[in-house]
Length: 428
Image (spheres, helix red, strand yellow):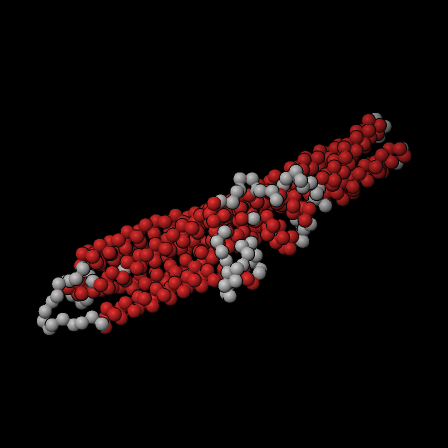
């Protein structure tokens, strides 16, 4: 199949597409994009389940470690204070965790921005395609109405004026038949008229979902930033309760990061399968949703020399009919006007209508060519398969760094005695 202009599957697409997939019974699943297949759905859900399993193991290990620290530490002699063990290690561990968090926040903001840019490019391509399809329908409707009005008024008036000359009446009726033929051919060019699928509605739905996705990640990033800042403040002021509270908040961030990690990984895997060979799935889905013929869809989605223009015959017949009308009107102007001056006004009106019709026809020829819609298809794929996928990978890295930071907070538990030795504020 043809490749849209400017789009080539990236190395990340090939790498993720080659990863093995399995269903809930751990049986291999083909990597072809098939979201309607149960086995493929299970393969993506298994990726999310692995993240959930990782979250469960992390919480179990953290709980076991806290139980050991709180319940199994031997008490010291009464009235004595042991030196804070590993105080410097605790401090450097917290600093390392903060640095990891800051790096993760920067990467997360970049990934969120890249994903949003890709979705915006996808929405823009859909809106431009909708504009092209709407322009085709509008031009066809306007031209058909204008020709119909000319047939009902000017040509009828011209026949009444020329009733004394049968050969001129025959020429007028020939122009009428040609105009009706053009109208019939043009009506078949509005191929998107009455189609239930609207690119405008799809673009609005995509933008609506993206707004909430972007906002959710911004809130997660801001939460992580606040945790880092308040933890740094707690270490600077040696406030035990502030550090403990931020440690608890970091556990909340840990849960959120594992959840986002599963969703991002499953989305990236599914997106790589789609982007490795998008034409087949898009063609089948569009044909199912619109009911259009495969010849029209192949022409616009593939747009190569192997696929002919399905509207070429209609365009050729319309062009010939318009040329015939033009020649007939010129003949009537030469023969009828000298003998029937009242025929000049409807003839001038018909010529004006014919000029407008020819202008609309040339615009239709340009709009119906596959270049425009195929370019929009390529732009949508680049936004989805390049920017969105790259943004998802950066968000994956952000989630991994958050998990690494949450592990670093574990060193705080080892320094619990040193935190106890820190001076506390009144009321803490």
